[in-house]
Length: 80
Image (cartoon, rainbow, N blue to C red):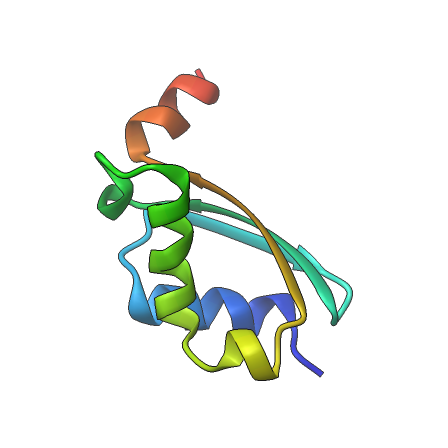
């Protein structure tokens, strides 16, 4: 069974992240991902970067992943 920690490690291995938090129950996961690579990209393109980092795991091991993808500036504005 896939753990939130594994998903976090897989994303960090393929995407530069300033902050990442993953929670889930083994089948459904939620992630907050902050990356400078998201700058200038629409949400769909940001999600595609995360899917690229996860590769085939997204189809084989992870059944559902809900994401909030933010730039460092968006993250700072949100967290004061």
